[in-house]
Image 1 (cartoon, one colour):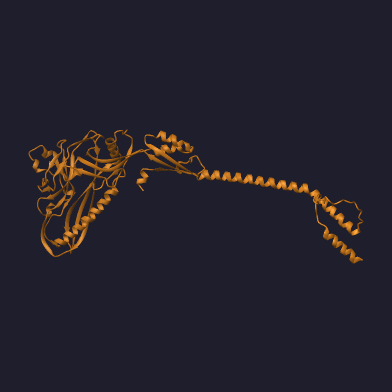
Image 2: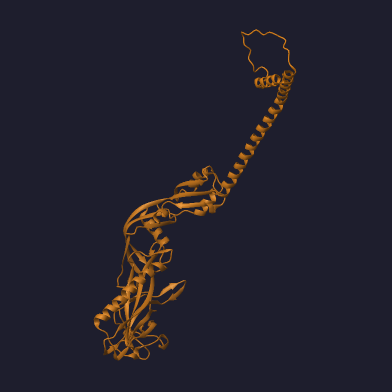
Length: 459
C-alpha cells in the first residue's frame, strides 16, 4: 500500500506543468462536464501548491513590467549622455586641431623678352632708367712647386692704386701705360686703359670720381716695393704737367706694391709653372663664381654669365727649396634690384600696367647681355643690357591682410576677399579641416597660405 501511494505521487508530479490561465485552448468538440473528483490527500497538496505558484506569478507581473520600463529608460538616458559627450569632444577637438589651407592664384602675365635698355650705376638718375650695381669679390690662392735649379731674373713690382678725378663732371680716359709718379720720383704705369668718372654731387656734397687700377713699376728692382704706409703723399700724373689737370688728378695706393726683384732665384720649368698657374686660376674661378651667387643680396639678382673674372700673377716666392706661386683673382658681377627690375620691365612691356607691386619669375634660359665701351664694363657708369627669353610677371598680394579678413570667418567670406583684392588676385581656394567645419581657425598661424604661381615654380 505505501508503495502504491509513492508511485501515484510521482505520476502526478510528472504530469504537472506551470501555465497561465487562458493558455490552454478548449477543444470545441469536447463537452465540458463537471464531474466531481475525489482527491486524495496527496493530490490535494500538489494542487494547492500549483494554485499558490500561479497566484505568485500573476502578482509579480506588474513588478516585472515596471522594472523593464525603468531599465529601458536608463539605457536611453545613457545613450543621450554618451552622444552629448561625443559631440562636445568633437567640438573641442575640431576647435583645437582645426587647420585650413588657402591657395591663392595671383594675377600674372607671360612675356617674351627681346629688348635692349640703357642701364646706369648712377643713383642720381631717375627711376625711369634701370639701375645696376657692380659687386666685387677678391680671393688669393697659392701653390708649392718643386724647383729645377736657379736662374737670374729681373721682376717688376706690381700693386693697385685708385685714381681720382676732381677736375670736372666729365669722365677722363687714361690710356694703357699712363704714368703715375711718387714724390721721390719713382714711376709706375697703369696696366689697362680706363675711364675715370667725373665729380659727383650726392646730397649736395661734391665727391671726386674715382676708379681702381692695376699698376706696375717702370723698371725691375726691389726699390719699387712699397707698402701703403710707406707712400708719402699722392701719385701725380706727369702727362698732365703744365695743365690744370695736373693738380686735379691724383692717385693713392689701395694695395701694397710688391714683387720687385733682381738676382738669382729658384726656378721651375715653364710647363710646370704654366700648369700650376692654370690650376690655381681654375680653382679660384670656381670659388669666386660660387661665392658671387651666394653673396648676392636676397633682394638682388645675378643673371647667368653677368660676371667678369681677372687674375693677376703674384710674385713668386723662391726663397726656399720649394717654389711658391700665387694668384690674385677678382670677380666683378653686375646685379639688379629685383623689385626695381620687375617694375621697369612691367612698365615697358605691359600697356595696362598700373604701377602695382610685381615680381618677375625668370626662366633658367633667360640671358642678359651687357655692352660697354671698354673691356671692363663693371667700371662704366652707363651700359646697354639686352634681355632675352621668356618670363612671367606676377602681381604681389598682402598675405597678412588676407589672413586678417578670413580668420575666424565662415568659408563664404572667400568671394568677398577675392573682390577686395581683385587688382592682384584672380582666385582663392580654401580647404578647412576637419571636413565638417565651415569656419576658418581663429589663430592665423593655423592657416597655411599657398601661392599657386610662385610656389609651383620654386618646387
